[in-house]
Length: 332
Image 1 (cartoon, rainbow, N blue to C red):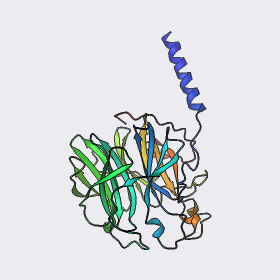
Image 2 (image 1 turned 120 degrees about the vertical axis):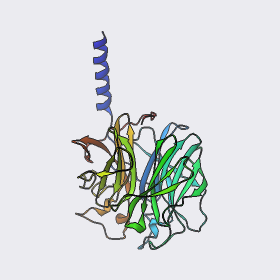
Image 3 (image 1 turned 90 degrees about the vertical axis):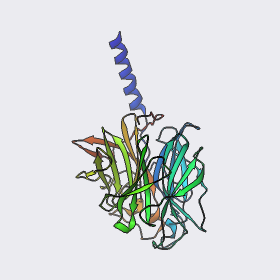
Image 4 (image 1 turned 90 degrees about the horizontal axis):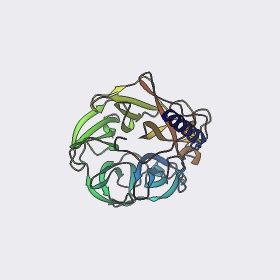
């Protein structure tokens, strides 16, 4: 009898998996400016849905400089399963001391006292890159309204792209990009998510948007190298070893997925790992759009599944992704 039940359960599982629809390509296109980038995804327990926070680049405005990458707000999209996403709003971030302020690349972590966001802040909307960039700490109880806690005192005033990870109950680490040091990855530590001590360089190589996660009994960091994504592994979150091959470098075949993947989020759910990344469809090598055009600036979010083979992470961006995220467990 037990064997029959096991067989039936297995058949039910197989039927469920095969009946699922694959995630669309592109996965998500911001309806306001069509410039979604730098996603981070959390489970909103209040609405029982997954929320994606992202940099809403203003791809659709007329601009031949880099002003369209500035003046951005943090968009929010939601999904019940991680497969189909719809626009919600922009986050009400109560940190805007400057006119024409810019919000970039949030990372979000939950603690006993609510949600903590680490946000890249630029004090204006600029036509070049020669301006300060800091990381700001914010808190929220509802994931919509965010109050300011502090500006992190890191190595300098040209830092972006925070990635926060809970090491244990008394230690958190935050990795970020130090633009003045060849855009290398540095890190800081905190006992409480509020008081941070800069610890120095973590990875000397050039890269942006570090994303740290635990999977396959080890830690990984994926870094946007502007030629695909570099993958590093670690057993202690201090010493990092780069794997030989990059992921999301070769062009895909799906709609809007022919350019390199950039600044990603990784969700480990029910033992499987999904990478949510953004790409500029108009920047494919074989048919590049005119520089500065809408097609050149436009960006979308895509999703693929990570696999672990022969000691390294691989990713086939053309493989159908039948993602169905479940409410996260503590060990996820």
